[in-house]
Image 1 (cartoon, protein in one colour):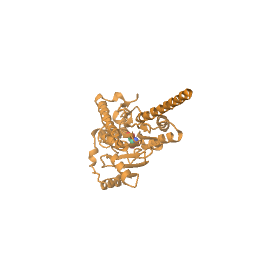
Image 2 (cartoon, rainbow, N blue to C red):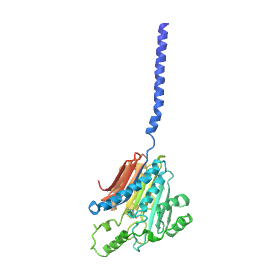
Image 3 (tube, rainbow, N blue to C red):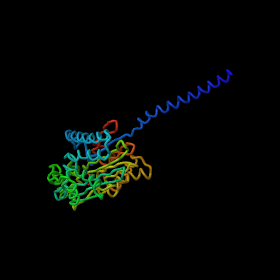
Image 4 (cartoon, rainbow, N blue to C red):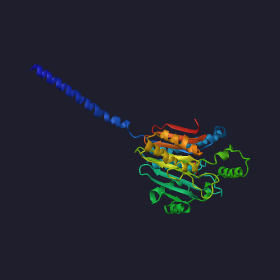
Length: 349
Ligand code: ASP
């Protein structure tokens, strides 16, 4: 009898231990959940090109760094408070559009006819919905109109006068085209025209070098796991015939897909269109299983470079990994992760 009692006690002890283990496991689950709370992140560019330290004054460098930080902090705050990736992207881009430092919104480059024609696009990775505008001349923040096209029109891309009529119908205020004027961009146009006439102006002239690039873009991942990307630009100095670059073309200048990544491009638009840069990066991840970094490197360093194009991208994947890949001397760029760690870069590292 004693033996049976001892045996039963032993069995109960074993069962109790098992019970304890289960409790321990379930009580540890919330901890695991906290660790798995979705991360978020944001990455931006302010254009790529022949950006060399020796051509940059300390004050200009400080101005770019401060503006990149100001812009990315706006988006980061939105994401931290649970806002959407799309809101973070557009509000971040607004800061850069409003700054004359960048070739987007105020400070856009001049066309051959001394006007400013702006292009922009956005894409929502959750729905694969997208919106774009091309060749607008009176829209202060073209990225907002691209979003409006996505949200409140049956179309993906509107251009020129029609896009502006749509803007007015949607309650956008149109600005006078003189709003976009900056002395520096106007001088760039004059110098580019001069260079075309004579070979006297050096290709290393900083006005010439920065005349091609300076687009702004952003890619973000929010706490709900949604990705979004956007790009806004004045295009290329001295462009003619209502030329449209890659920035408003979904798949070239902008792409986002929750299954893979969100991408914004900057560079020589004709090559970025031909290489379908932003979608190519996503497709390499989706169909070939490449990591974001591998895909971005392949497209920028090999595919675009082999065609003779230059520029770069910023991108973020569904896990918050980031790529800031470029094949030019520099690219204005910044990244902020969920912990608030900030990286800002201008030149090649
Ligand atoms: N990609 C733009 C364009 O070709 C230029 C830029 O990125 O600065 O219009």
